[in-house]
Picture 1 (cartoon, helix red, strand yellow):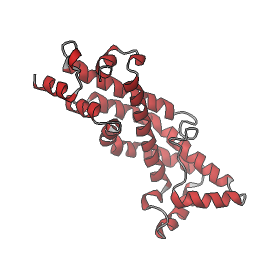
Picture 2 (cartoon, one colour):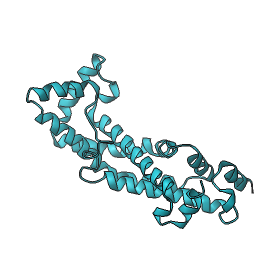
Picture 3 (spheres, rainbow, N blue to C red):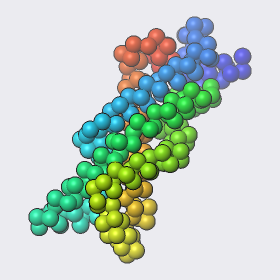
Picture 4 (tube, rainbow, N blue to C red):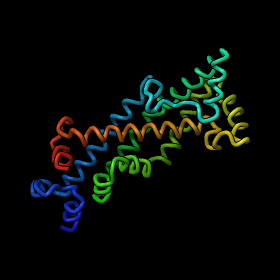
Length: 221
């Protein structure tokens, strides 16, 4: 009864559907929404041009290096830089399938209280939930994949040498001075961003998802 009251107060259970939808169903609806969003985001990003072809998540050179790249391209030296940007994005795409198990596991283990915070927490609540639960372990999973992918291009050492000097002069953030760490961090940012975009679609059109439980939970909000 206490949790049911909590759900009603938080708005997870619309008053008109309170009798028809119990706390277990409500939490299940939120879990279903998050799992759909996570799986859809991984599918979108974990394919050729999932990052490279999407301006919202495409990984570019950071800060000073991006500005320097513009000058080099203007002098006809842009081919290697284009190869590096492509390699960074291909590395992020290759890492995406590793995220599925951890993201789905986080969803399945979420509590009713987690569900309330997500529904009532605003547009970034899903990002905060997944980042809090999975960013550290996903970093460990992504890093070796990104390392192998960038090393194949033979450009990682060159990036790290130039970026290290730029960071030493204060022209680049220290955390962006290592290509493996930089790409891993941006890949995760892109993943959480796309999950948030998928969640927005479900909130806006729960009926369109074809799920009765999502319609009950999100359709009344």
